[in-house]
Structures are given as C-alpha cells and as structure tokens.
Image (cartoon, rainbow, N blue to C red):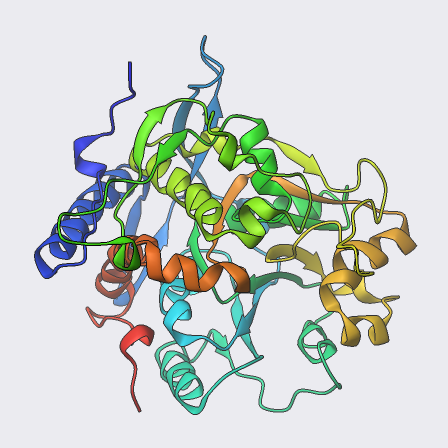
Length: 415
C-alpha cells in the first residue's frame, strides 16, 4: 500500500495566488508541529534572542522494514561546540536564491541559538542589486554577517583566503542551497572535529556523486510527472508535485550514473527534479532520515577515479562542506585560483593522502547545476515550494529573533 503523507505536512504549490496561499499554510502548519515539539525555548530577561536547551536533530531508527525506518527528532545541546569558533563561508551572487538560504543561515546563528558565530559572504558573480540586498541583510545581522570589502588574491583563491582565523572551523556554502536540515551544520562540525577525515561534506541532494548513492540505497521513490493541467501544452508545463507510484524507482529513464558529470542529474533537469521531488516528498512524510547513509567515503577507491573526457577530474562536488583553517596550511594556492573545486575535492586530499566524506545525517538541498537551471525553472514549481518552506522559517525567525520583522526578500528585491 502507498505510504500516506501526514495531512498537515502536505505542500501543493500551483501557479496561482490561492494555491500558493494554501501551500504556505500547509507548510507553516507542518513545520510548526515539528518545531513546537522539538525546540525548547527559554526566555531570558529582556533579550529578544532565544536560548534553547538543544537543537532538534533527526535520527534514523531501524525497524523490521529496512526501507521504512523510524525518523525520530531529539534535542541535542551540542555542548561540545559551545567554545568552538564556526563560520559560514557563502559563495554569494544570486539574491533570488540567497533569499531562501538566508532563512536557514539566520536559524543557525549562534546568537539565535545555533552554532554559527558569523557568516562571511564572498562576492563571486553579482550585480549592484545583489550587493544592495546583501547590505540589507548585513544591516539586519550586524553582529554576525560579514561582507569582506578587501579580498586579496587573484581568482578563486580570494574566497578561500577569507578562512583566515587559526583554530576556526568553516562551512563552505553555495548560495543556491534551498534546504538545510536542523542540526546539519553542527553535526558536520562535530564529525570534522573527530579528525578522521580532511573534509566533511553534507549529504547533498542534487549532487554529482551522492544522487547516485541516494538511488542505490533506494531513498528515491518512484515519482512521476503529474498530467498537464487542462488547457496547457508542453511549452508551459510548470508542474506541481510529482505523483507517488511505488517505493522503488524502476523507470529506466531515471538511472543515475555514479559519476560527477552524469547524464541523469547533472545534464538533465528532469533527473534533478526527481531528486528534489523525492526530498520534498520525504520531508512532507517525515521520512527524510531514509537519506541517511551514515558515512560515504568519496576516496574509498582512491583519487581521480573519474573524468569528464576532456581532462578534468574531480572526486565530489564541494557545494557544502566543513573544513578547518589549518587544512589549508600546505594547499596549492595556484591550483585553487585555477580550479578550486578540483583542488579541494581531489588534488589536495591526494597530496595529503587523506579522505573526504559525506555525512548522511546532514541533509541539505543544492538547487541547481548550470545546465539544469533553465529546465528546473521553466518546468517545475520546486523553487516555489522550497521558498514556501523557507517562508515558514522566515516567519518564525522574525517572531523569535527580530521583533516581528521579516527578512528582506531577495527574489523581489529592487534598489
């Protein structure tokens, strides 16, 4: 029998005002049910900022059915991180996506009960409007957000040189991250502190390597595109949530190759849509812990095991990962300037003979690779649904931490 979604957690976004309102209401109710049960808020004096007894994290508990574990939410105070300096390092330049990311960043600030002491926004490709929006976010978070006006270096290395505080830990974050599970960031830092691996990646949905892993552990159910609404044709198929068919994806058109430049996922928007739809479906069904594979070692079979056929080889995509300042003591800065992803994911670990891994319980969503973007925006309502989910957090952030004031909205921002 088909697993039934919790009614309060269903999110169905259509391209209409009424449906969007319904989606936000459903997402809001679902999130509040989960968060009210998980977050323990203690009001302290006149401080409007919250203090929490713990950060809600999801744990995977095995049952008699290996494809249907029990996903339990528990509070973890992360006491071991209270005296650890932790910063986000954001590749910034697209305000329409950063609008969603910011909700999660504010949720994770230490001043708001999280673990991030600050967030550094490295300017990559941006417009004046993007910068103007970022300045507004900085004004909202003057103690925590940093815009580095004087960046030294020549190319991609300018970003990584910003991680310059000895002893500090950093999370590199792409600006098109559209979901961060509660506890994902502190879990990654905790694993990094154990010293077993050079780099610790999140469990990234829509990832060149991990998308295949998600299919291999049967975390992707068989979902299919809904029928076109009456009166529309294939040139205007802005489709809502995909429909559940079975627990296991058996459609041969959606076989994800285990390589960083796969046809299915990296090149095809519909494969990217599938993995996003799977995450949103599981979030609504409170079964996202199915994505948790424990630890996945990117270098279990060595280094430079894959290539794109024209001379580039990377072992994993560095969309969201934890590192320490000292990890770069002996890095090849010329290599970083030329191709930072190749240097971080492959060459630097190879020189050090250390491994990079992904942490299964730290689930995040990476919106798009460049070749997927147009198709995802034109053919799906995924971004609208991620935004509706983030808006629940924006409202909660506003009420708890910012005196009821919502964050500036990047997707509608004008100077």
